[in-house]
Image 1 (cartoon, rainbow, N blue to C red):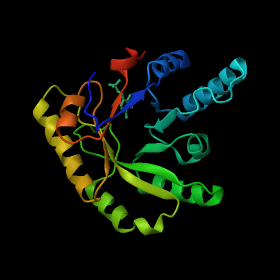
Image 2: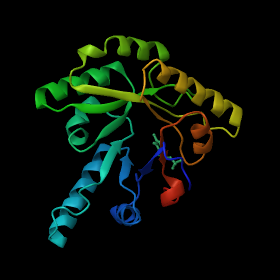
Image 3: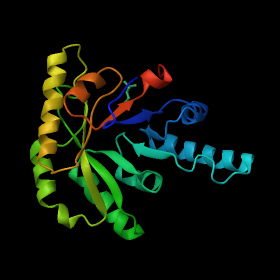
Image 4: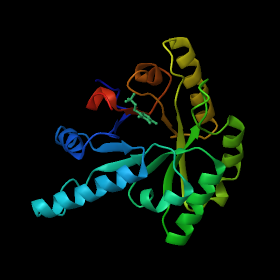
Length: 212
Ligand SMILES: *Cc1c(COP(=O)(O)O)cnc(C)c1O
């Protein structure tokens, strides 16, 4: 898979064993994403055991984790200390909870605002209007760094629909100024996402194979 130098590859390792992550790491991949708090914590523990087993505390120390799944406010402590980016902030309530958790624990979190751009009712995300409000109020979130947006296109073969939805996400991102991250594109639609201005693609099955 060839990506332009401006696009970061996030390897989505959910449902795959830690050994698969190690293999990708050996091949040079540094950024991985998980979607379930329990699974993230389990993988952190496995990494810790590997370090002890190898007698090498710095084993894989330059690995970076993103969180990309739905995050419940009672699971913040399982996720926030371990990740460099929460890509899936899909409600104002969650944003506020991350900010107050950060205030209480003195931890600033980098986040993306997950926007609802698709036709699929099952998908989550903020409306364009909610994003505008958050941006206007962003000074009040001292413990949150809003780095950009994330979105998922409809599950369809129609490239025009996907192009239009990613275009809308890029438009929302343009309200947020320069250097805004736009996380869009998965195994099935990343070429269109890149065409529409993605800065970060989240690829799972194309790297690790099918999930069961
Ligand atoms: C699982 C997942 C991906 C990766 O999907 P693939 O089709 O396997 O590339 C990307 N983004 C999110 C939010 C996911 O949950």
